[in-house]
Image (cartoon, rainbow, N blue to C red; front, side, top):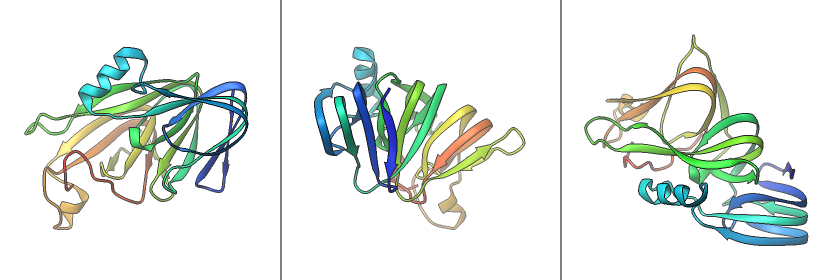
Length: 212
């Protein structure tokens, strides 16, 4: 299995001894030894994953890197966080996924409706199995614990990923911006209940709902 380690907070070094990893296309910045690079279609599991991504718009261009040596990955100076999985599943926005062990299974899952008024659905990339994944954030990520006693509300633009036994609900009618008298478009928050971890970033991306 490949060995993941951070060099600083914005560069991922992956050491390989004949094994492989899947990484965001174009994220390789340097390598030593003997490496082979192969662009993969879709980023999900086979034809089903590719078709699902085309239907949902959850885009993820992936390359397979295999060889002997070390490969370094980075993307737009984003902060990188390592997540170790031991048979669990990680839900992560496709744009925030940098690299995974090749043995981890990736796919797309429907995570809920974004309000009844529009009927739009949200789809998230899943990573499952045993191994390591590297996720990115705009600024240092914060990991928040959710317990049955303390559910968590998250701004969709700040959400990166989550893991554990969590139920995800979308609450329309209010966002953190509308609480302050700002913003437009359809207002909603993501509510997490159960037991697990939620990763958020200190910067809001544009979401499919427009100005949230």
